[in-house]
Image (cartoon, rainbow, N blue to C red):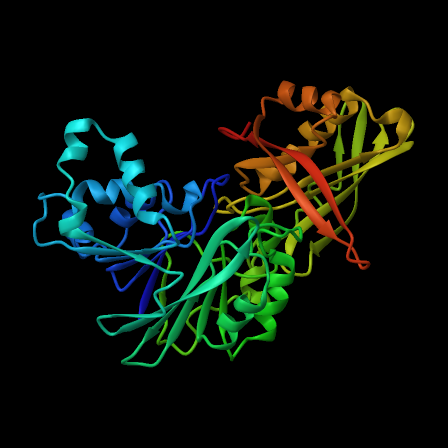
Length: 422
């Protein structure tokens, strides 16, 4: 069985909405943009062939990021455009009325009148269907807990190989989710955020569950928010949009990170320029190198550590660190960190420290610097703006301490692009 992950995200992410394609003809959920993702997948099929092959839809619940694109499919599959195409839609109660209403709202009257649901589409209520047989698959719906909404997960068994794949849809942890995990070879599990709620499971506890069931059931994170996705960095390999999973593989998805050799961000041949940049002089402050290290436990990023001293009398006023990121790095919270004593947390000092540390970055061929600050720190934001940086986004990070308490921090992520060695 082959699973194409059309989307790994939820509605408020840059990644596509959570959706899965089974062997090119079964679609699990179809939120906004799913059709576009389908057309990007499987280069061996033409666009119209990908649509014509869609013969079974499994809808977990009626939130827009899980079924709104169904109207795009119906425009083709429920009309005489492809008279040989027939599709079955398995969905929670009320699906036929909802989907017809969605098509009616999203189409002109003339287009809607050309649809013939009775001829081409079969609706199946997943709450009463029992075990549904389709080709060489046996499909079972499982009630899950997603707040007040009626939501279901699906267990899909390949009767030829005996393999079982489960899709939880959106859900908090509940007995039926554990039932799916216990009786599946692979399970796509909602790990939306970093907090415990009655609507979604979370990535923090999800990673623990992935490790616990390793070798028994391959658990794959799904429906990730930006916070959950960021939490994974340095902890596990995260599935990506359009990844293809071979369920028959002994290890269809490996969440573990690669060995230390490949986690050295600067490469094995990285050389610190300690002699060249032992002291970097400025008009107000100097940066005096106090040490270097391969920073971090998951990613060993080469890091310079500088004391910030006043140019006039060498009084220590703060610290600056710079961590090298190669040009192909896909994102980072920050690779420049600045801390100052209270009386010296000044715009002029921050500005000069940024311009001085940039010299080290340019020496190593860096193309940009990532700078962060609190969204309410308008003074530092003015410094970054004056430098010519651009605000990439404001990230929210939820952390969990040893007492299981969770705190939320927000940070502005600024990118300072270094062009033409300047």
